Image 1 (tube, rainbow, N blue to C red):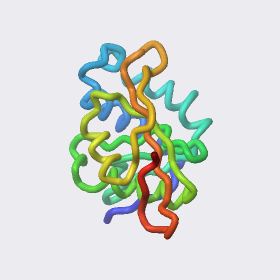
Image 2 (cartoon, rainbow, N blue to C red; image 1 turned 135 degrees about the horizontal axis):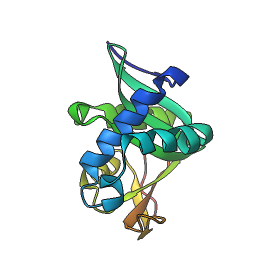
Image 3 (cartoon, rainbow, N blue to C red; image 1 turned 90 degrees about the horizontal axis):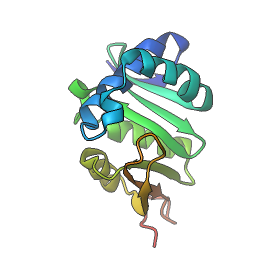
Image 4 (cartoon, one colour; image 1 turned 45 degrees about the vertical axis):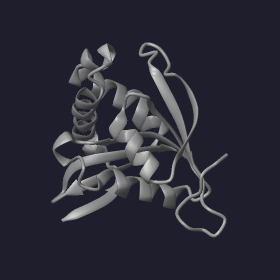
Length: 159
């Protein structure tokens, strides 16, 4: 059974592992990611991500396969375990984020993250600013915004 539910504390190790595997697969161009250990990922998740974000997990038969971390209207993290990618999890989690923040959403991703950028484009986000991610990565990134259309339909492009 497919479900999206609120994160629970006993999801911690599984969610950190999903984040770690997904990041290693997606960020082959980032030496800092390739050097990140699962132990360090768990520590960062526990001490940085979980305390500041509202978390949701996507599950299949109660197995966590994806997660969404929201900080207000900001999508802080959206990761899907590599075996479950391209099966609608990104879309489902973005749709949830739009429900949670109906006035609009913001996020950053790396310019080289083609899969994520394609998803955000399809989901009605607009690239509004190009820059660099914070150290230690300092890699080219892009800021995206989504704003609802005046009629309340899916989205509109910002100028």
